[in-house]
Length: 426
Image (tube, rainbow, N blue to C red):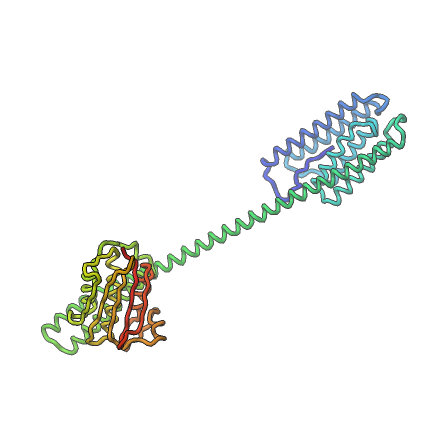
């Protein structure tokens, strides 16, 4: 009698998912038992055992099927697979022997028994089991057939079915192995997917914590800059007012140091804006480069006689972010003013295709080839002024990259430095 093949795929299966399979197996068992009862009645008396004996076998098979079904219903595992397969084979072979041997239609149950066993056991065991069932069937043919069936025909029939039972076991084994490989491939894929998902979640959490930590540091930096800026501005205003009323070297020194402190605060503020998200979206509008140049050079402390501004064409207007552009030019102008002494600082705007080209030229000591590659790094200062932050050109480089432009530094003929900006504009 064929038994429940559940468990062929390793691993626990939810009961609700097993229920359709249990119903199918139960239906097959009921059908097999019923067919044996019909076979007992329909088989010629001369070819079968007494009807009472055959019906007793059918009753035992029905009770056996009921016990297996009850075990599944109450959630018990039931007998070991080898016991189930052996019992199925014994009952089926007895049915063959009691209903005609080589001429019995009960032989059709044996392939079901072999297939069910193949789903429960390993390949070699299933094929060995098929051969044993085939040998037992041959014996049932020899012993259970009527004298009208020649002995040779009995043996041939037994060997014939033995071959096909072995073939069925081998073919079922192929199907089982393929299903097992597919199951394992799906299991590996699911495990990899879960591992990747866990890694992504962990990476996302780590990134979030790093961003929160970084944002907290930036917020602290902005608070410090804000708290320092107010007293620095007030102190600078008081020093300038006092110097106008009563000039003295001490007040001049205080004013110079306050201006330097304000410059360093501007630099630290720019670092906070570049490293964090505080830059925000660009606020683009129409800009008159000449007006922007005058404001930037004046803010850098250059008097009108030290300013040389060239705009080509003279009525040039561009579309961009004036605050960012002014910060770029202001940093370059401050750097040029710091190193040029009393020389003029030249600022030139030129429209070349879709780009705005800005050049700031000074007559300072200039930089060597090695220094040109280092001066745009953070906290690098090549000048002789003590206490400079070393952030000005780095800020220009970072802001330029943020705006999609390019900064180039080169030595100027006759001494000095040329800072060239190429920025997208329209």
